[in-house]
Image 1 (cartoon, rainbow, N blue to C red):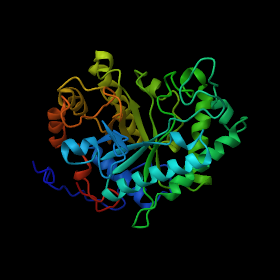
Image 2: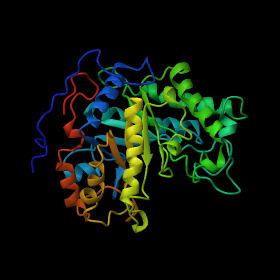
Image 3: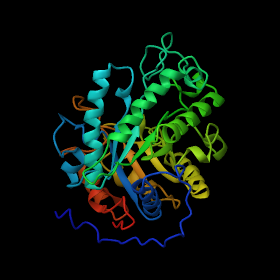
Image 4: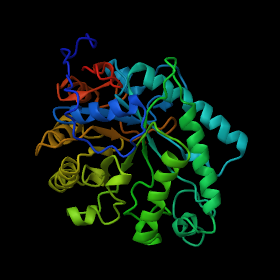
Length: 376
């Protein structure tokens, strides 16, 4: 199979001065601005495929150079690679520095290969034990404590400085900083994280979000982030989706995490899933923002046709304009916790069909994604 010649090159030309966009950081690096525009262009006719922790580890392996389970199956890494800032707080200084060193390599490698990094943040509770999950009797509802004026606000600023230091350090061989899509406080409409809806007010959530974005870009000088807003799937209308929306000046990308409608526990409600995708895709078009299916997947992928008959069919419906779809990680040790196929997995053949479809784009299909000379 010739993976290199999967698709004919498509040159995307840009008419200078005719863009209508709403990127929030007017001081963003040239590469970050170009990425934003190129992603908007991609979303009109195609979608990028992403995989969480794709380069760090996979099914039965970890820390092997230039390896991913997706590449083992298709010959190409995913176009979008997910990392996590979970180790940037609640650890010793030495542990945090080690975590930054490891992640820095993956971010720069992805940038230099022409791929895209998206960052989730399983944020360890700064005011109590319990990690990032909510644990009754242990966890503290801490959003009110880390907002401006809160008891833990200064500690929160130090954590953001760690993130900013990392953002300033991901300099590639061309001397440019690697752009990243930063997705804080995800799935906030659920109750499983300490920042979830039952544990914080709408006003406190918005105050923390707005401070986070402003402090990073305006005070700490981070100009290689795009900011993604991504609830879980607990909304059924535009109004419900926007209930905790912090405002157009604080968000670059609208998203959603949805496992429940796409086969979790053997239950499918694709009509509901599509309706939700359509809600925020349309909102993004109206607001001149990006949109992405920020997390989904089917654990263990027992449905041999899931990629084409469930995911791809949904993504091609209703004129959706989504930048990427990202499935969750492949655990190194677990025999069942994986969301992308590996050689020999029952959905491998169907995933190759998904890969070959002209609608889906992988890293191999991208060229100069950070440039105005971008082509696919």
